Image 1 (cartoon, one colour):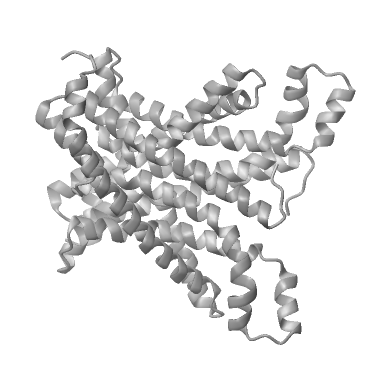
Image 2 (cartoon, helix red, strand yellow):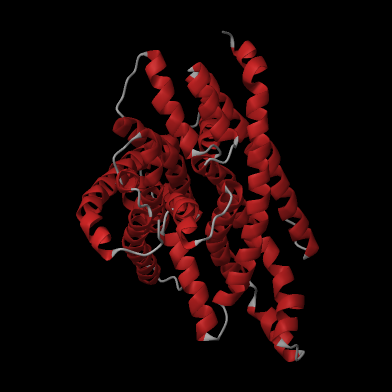
Length: 223
Length: 225
């Protein structure tokens, strides 16, 4: 069987899986961005309870493996009466896990805003909320976007794990097709290429565009 | 099925889990050892003055870095036998992890080499040192401290990715937990124990790396934060 007839026969199945992967990617990305913002700010709070909560959250999610968390959420939480659908469980776990990494990036970004900006905001007698919202946050994007872009590519790769909790994504479909046809090279090879194309030609250019946009917003030219 | 945590069951399975933890640590160690060497090979490919090698090297690194480790594992495990190469799950897992993280480590090495100020190279040129001598006595001693935090982070990263090996049947911690859970039809304790063991091992490791990083920065006269 040539590769093209393989693609003609099973290409649509793999593409269907790709759609699910993209869905997981988008939902998890939104969740992780929100979580990293919230916990990144909490991590810098002066209130020890808020700061402690954020630190424990971050250390917990960064300290255990994503796959363990995923299995725990999907197989153990139902015993406590919380049954999540496979898709939801996957998105929530990935989002929370990457949110912990993202929070550290946000924290680093806020710290990296030049001190003069903080002092300027103090001098103008801005309230802490206004200082953050109007002065500091808009400036962190050029700093946090490059590492956040790396993290998002990692997230795309991590979405493959949701196949292990029965989400029918690209990896799951590739495994399925493999178990029917036993053409492993074609199945997994195609899946690898699809992931590569998604990351190299869609995700990375998009994130790069965001970086340029953010840099331009604060008047920095990165070229 | 009730959600109550049963201490007797947890303690009963603990020895089995701890034995499996040794396998996990072993897998992470071997995988890391391979990755450090693979990283050096990719670094060489990147720094050779031949343009074609550079391009191929970069594309290979890009490809490995932007595809999921899970499918790479499947690929190596299921495809190699089709070409008559039958390797055990252990060997497959180690090769894949080594390759995957080797690409990351090559970036760490590159960053470290580029972190050595250019003036150091120029001074060596001015003193007429050979390239080998420049690397051995001037550049590498300065690049190594820069590389340590990144290298440490990926060691922890590999450790946290070892559960993936259970998907191809490597008998490490997660595999043991699934087996125990399936046998007794209780997943609460095994999976929770896995999480706790991971926390106990990786949080102190990450803290240690952070400490090391700080002390290196201090010894080099750089102050962080």
